[in-house]
Image 1: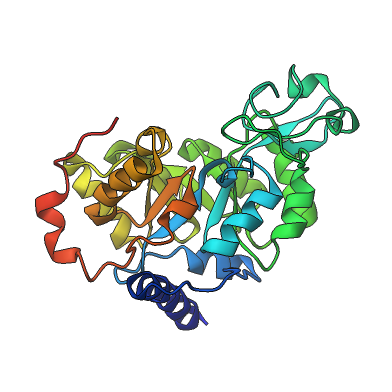
Image 2: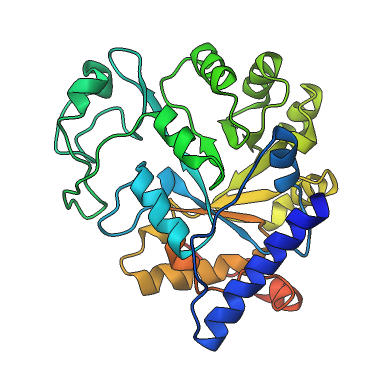
Length: 314
């Protein structure tokens, strides 16, 4: 089963690149079916020949499709494979919804704090896309999102104001195989593991000190992906090598850097600088912009060192 899933990932990455090269378009939707926690752990194991994996930050976004919105996830998957980092928050009546900010001002037609509204009250508002255009879509609950995602993708929960115990109990009740947690430190990971021994994590791990802390807390390497920062850095190569030795994939986020460039063409130029640097996962606000980029490794692995650390970000 492990070999089959890895071959599927390799084949899909090669297929997308081959179609881009030939001018043909691979047909979606591009779904990832995770049926068990063991399969989820397996899916995130490092393999040097595997194409780079793309993650949608805040669920990704396209013009007309807002962040943290089920319809936006589906739109992205119609174009390319991706998993999604999403942002759970609590409403006034303790419903867990998706919303990055503490307020709804930026992303909806309403104003005020999420925590000042009941879920029913929030349904009077419509979500806005990145350009501020009003869409027909409403704020979803996390439960709706999890139900939709089964058999389609992986969800990475970047939890905002939901207490750890509340979130852990919620996930244990639904028992989704395809959901993981973002944690900022080893202590957070240990607290979740004590309540959910099979939990999968996206762990902030940016230096050898933090690497050591995860080891001290006995966080299973088979149950983590490492967020190592906004780019791969030459002075952290020991960290990347150690993580890879443990079978852990290294993720960088381009949301604070290249995603902020003015045009799609400028964004893509920035992405192309990061692809050869040795990262295994790229998180971005715009996963759809990667659909025609070469995410396979063998075509650029010999030119990595010369191009790796010479760029700057805007």
